[in-house]
Image (cartoon, rainbow, N blue to C red; front, side, top):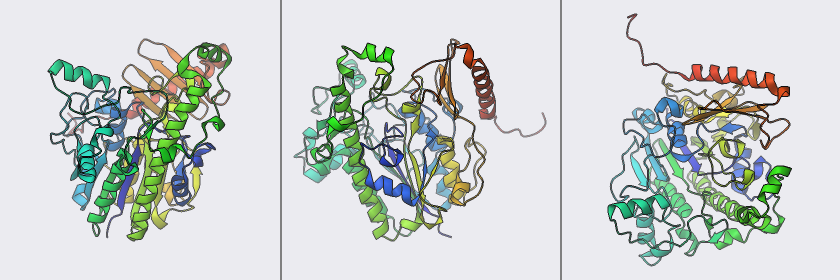
Length: 468
């Protein structure tokens, strides 16, 4: 049998509610909304870590970050780590990662040097748009004949500047002055030279070049990660004055007064850039999906859309991601379309799902045995109309703390013993920590026990060879 192709459309820093299909009336995502109608939308899907590197390593290995020893940023993923492409290779798959992978720290290396393969046959790595000499800048140079390459950098990351200064490296890339402004920035070059366009075009090229054999392709979009640099045509789709603003509780409403990063105008400007970047990704995903259909591959290809973590976007008076991994950061989109094999397409599944569940799902769909080291549960029963064993919680972990999300509560435990408890039913945006209120003592006790059980269940030992 020919095994199905696998296309993973992987954005960076996209909240679960940054999709029209997930109830956001402000954002425009027609192609992703259509993908959800043709597949299954898992709207309570949680990642295992709230920042890029460990979340991505966990996703592509099917193991929790702590099992990998990768619970924080800046730890290179060991080159012998077994990833999805290595699991598929013996079954005839050719594999590619286009764009962001972020298995290595990117601020302290020369991006012109070959990247470790991590099981992929084809790599076009560009972890940040335009700020390093990498596959993206090489593509821009070839496509635009060098005429536009000086406008594609989003800005040198601060850690990269420190590295360059310490090592005496002369950076020859031209960067904008600001790295993380809280507003939308029109892309200064042609629309077809953005990092998102690069990922889409090279994805389409890989698909076209590998007709007739089974393939895995990961399209690593940088958007909608800040800074919010996006072509004017997508900015012009929106009227920021109409955006729905966060409803801050009284104490935070008082704190945000006088803070320029959290005025209504700034919150609208940030959403303008963020939503516009999502719409640009949506546009190019539409092109990729159209190619699959025109090539007769729609029913032969498993399509997954997801992200590595979310974004505060001004909620809780924060931007970015991190502790304590609340829904705006740990809950992200997950849409899976499996050709005509999807039973009852168009469903939204409210069950709690974890990122480690995706790998065993793909392996089972492809007819590949699931290694015992994987720690997730296959979602295949949802696609076959069968009963799926339900999860009671989702675990998000980072060095120094762990966060557990159930349907009703979120519990956070720090290594110093500090606890947080949020009642999701009463406080869906998780603003009020009720860990020290007597009314919630039983819920706090139940969540402690549940977290301990999850940690015990998560353990994996090396295989025994005999009784002693």
